[in-house]
Image 1 (cartoon, helix red, strand yellow):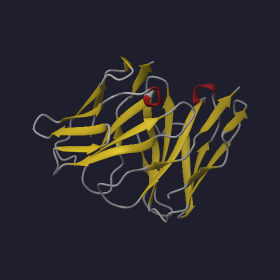
Image 2: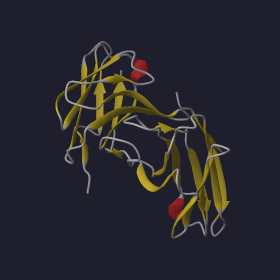
Image 3: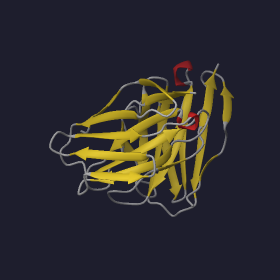
Length: 112
Length: 113
């Protein structure tokens, strides 16, 4: 089955700097890659997703890139702000009606 | 907007009790999921269901069972609670098929004493 590895497990950046979180996946048939943000005490919420027919997607300060050949995808947050502090999860999903497989999460701290 | 509602935010039970965690979604989604979240271990899938009365084991089904009698409701059952089942439990739902995100509830923090 699918296996998703996520790095780093913790990340501290200065406010205004960029943050990058990387994930790799094992199943070449996977074709959907969402990212979730979980603030302390709250539910995981979808912040951006990408499908396998696209190499990059942007939404304001957030972008996701996908390299299908290397089987890795990354989340990029520019101009980080204290409210970006949270745990971020990547996930991958294969074809058909299968569940998402999640990485173990990255705890991002943005230092003011 | 999708709403996934879990019946309790906090729950305290005793070892050996039978525990029910309830989840309801309002978007007519075919799929529903139960995850367990522990620090450093991420989100681990316990069970999922893709239709009424249908269920599939996830990565860590031991000690748990599920029930889906109605499309909107998915219950997680701890048959005989143990202290190592103290955790945060998250329910999620999604439409049928590929390339669809899962929508999460607020979670139930369960403590087994």
